[in-house]
Length: 261
Image (cartoon, rainbow, N blue to C red; front, side, top):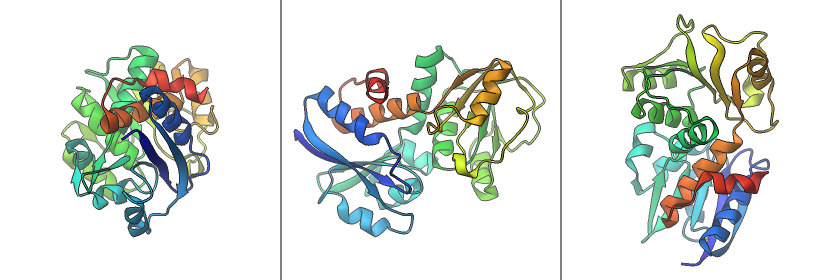
């Protein structure tokens, strides 16, 4: 197939940059096609399912649909099953297939940005939603020493803590933190005057938000001397991993990042 009908689905969706990434990917692969933003809420799983294979061949999935997307799938990749989250749906041979490339995209982004090796690192993850679950899974498999998880949903936090022996629900950190990741949507954040205990100028700080490009949380960590990154590199790298799953090849997130700048 060389003509592809793509979309990004979720709510709110107007801010999404995924169509720009889709168009850049189509061009890189030599395909033609289109990409749209489609507003779909968490309770509209059947509507999403009805669009797959009829209106769209493949879709990127954002909040709050990542759990819904996994449940719609006829087949799911092991990564998506483990993190109970899917950011990509693809129709092939009549089956809806699901995958999560958020974790892979996150690791690719920090490696590309900083050459960061997380093996043996102590990490803090803020939030416990679909993206956080995928990132925790990827970090665990990459060999981190520990992850302290801070989420508002006790149920989600407990599931992740039970899944991995080196993931803990700690509110106080007694050791230096090499990496801290904020996955909490900006509107849901509580303003904080100080960075978390354990964070130093040697800590790398990643904010998955990219609107605004520099959040208050990022500015606080930058002022401390941390290496700071917003969510655009991860967005590009997870999209590249998603397209490699759809189409094969060796498209890199660094190539796609230029479409966002």
